[in-house]
Structure formats: structure tokens, C-alpha cells
Image (cartoon, rainbow, N blue to C red; front, top):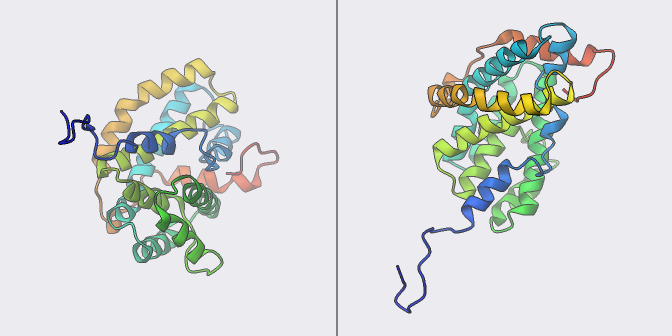
Length: 239
């Protein structure tokens, strides 16, 4: 199809959107996710995870817990990507996360994501304004899930893509951590990620579009094990 002036009409309202989506999910984006093992390092040292089959069970439980606990915060921030909603959702999540190690990891990754997004996605000046307005005020903790949802909302993602993307990032990072901890090799990791994809889709659909008051823990043992990370004698990851 062509425009009135004879030029070719773009199929996309925002041709750059898919590229922004892919970049947000790209491992090269410096958001700090690969510095965290989601408790896997502690699970290995406590012998909860000893072999690839244990790893698959751990990954599935982590995805379930991510969907039940964090997708409601992603979804709420996505729906209203503004300063007031962000502050509110961030405050509720800070009170919800009882695991100190997990809370610090969420803040570290969220702060890095907000800093990176404000620098990369300059077509959305409100990101930089919100970050500068909030730094040093103590009003917001910069938790990862609300910031991810807010950025996706401002970039024009749809709801389903946003929540699946958050699950994908979690799956990507935990399998990367498992590879570096030598629980599984690079090829085995790729196979595992593909095998778990269908489960991740089912879990995404199960916990998608939930309000904040339905956020809950489904795997409290994972939360407990992650809390032991600070007591490990030697550590490769921050959490």
C-alpha cells in the first residue's frame, strides 16, 4: 500500500517498536541480571540441585513463583506507567518481599534497568525525568518488576508480551547462571530452555493479568534457600 504522496506505507505504526522489544530482552543490555542466580547457587551448595533433572524442577518452580508473585506488579505498572503508580506499586512490593537477599537483588537490577532504559530509550524523555526526580529521595526503592512493566508500557508493548517477556528474562538468566555454575553445559542449557518454554507459556497464561492483591508465593522453599546465599563460604553471584 502507498500513501497519498506515492511513498510506500509502513506496515507498522511504530517501525522501531520490535527493535526496542528485542533490545530490552537482549542479554547485552547492561541491567545486571547475570550477577544473580535466583538462589540457585545456594541451592547447589545445599544439595537441593545436584544434576540437570533437579535443575529443571528448580527452574519450573522459579517460573511459577515469578508468575504468582511478580507478574501482578509488572502488570500493574504496565497499565499505568506513571510516577504515582510506580511509587505505589514499588512500595507494596518492598513490603511483600520478606527475603532480604531477594529484595536487594530486585533493587539492584531495577536500578540498573532504570538507568539503562533512561539512557537508551531517549525517545521516551519521561523515563529520564522520572529517574532524576526519584534519585536520592527515598520515596522509591527501584524494584525490578514494576520498572520492567512501566518501561514496557511506555515503549508501547501489549500486556501479554510484557508479562511473557518478564518470564523469558527470568528463564534466560537462571539458565545462564546454571551454565556458569557448571550444573549444565551450554548445549544442554539451550535444550533445557526450549523444553521449558511450553511450561513457561502455561505459567504465563495462568498468572497473567492478576491484580496486586492476588500476588502470592507458590514456592516458599526457594525463597528460604535464596535467603541463605549470604551465609555461603564462597560465592560467584550476588544473590
